[in-house]
Image (cartoon, rainbow, N blue to C red; front, side):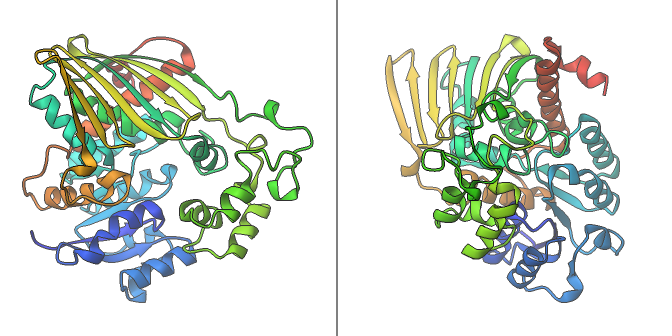
Length: 422
């Protein structure tokens, strides 16, 4: 494989998760420029990727105005900031590794897809679950016919109560108008993986869900706006910001995001939760995204899926797949797959942590796996079955938008008709 070069637009956790592949595999990937408005993150990226000052920018527009300086662009800005740089870098002829979701509206997703197809550039949207050992094994088992034809699926995404409070109550994805609907921001992973496993198009969707718990009506009597101000329920609250962000020194993710810095000090964290959004009472935020949602989906040939996203749990995903020759129950959190064969009338248990594999990193190895396959794809080399083109990703986004439309209007939505009206 020849070495490819990339620019990084957005040097937060997601952008660096992909770009960091270059640190150990410099023969395959080299980072040539970065852009981020945050001085701390931009400086950290400059040092990490050993860049000259001339290749470090505060604004991605500065790079877009220059002659093309890399083979592809990693776009990992906030959801609402995907659209403009995606179109700009497509126009410049860059291939894209684009963080999910493609964009927060169906119209913008369609525009990105059409622009990429017209220009002839490749866009890989970061549906990282496809590239994990867990989901790849499930796909292999289905494709090999181990349970016959899929008839129906029950799939659960357990967001986790602390994750919900961090990202979707206090954090960047708390408010639809500022980011995207919860189903798109969190579960476009799952809508994509379901279609990939089934291998057929979704025809109709129906959805219900709401914001039930993280609301003002559940605010404890006497609770201040910020936890550090002294809450009467501080010792009993699962979401006490002092406990989650300051006391817990092991949670680098929470601490770094709250302080908006790489490797923040205790002082940075305390300052952040004293006046910033991550220190707010979870019952006194401007959040409006749902904390639980169910989606029923009907695919071609009558395959049905029941999907649930819920905040009130420890976290993790599990799935039950019902086929004409057997059944699979799989738990991603514990990397365990249980296959029941109708013919043998017995269970076969596969523990993936005991299977050799070289995929490591975030999202169960998916963050590394997608970079490996994207580099092959951009290089016109054979890839795994995990890779998908921009059109496939777009159609799976449309299913997600259609499900959210169903939740809002209370009707069953025909996905093709919904797409035709965009």
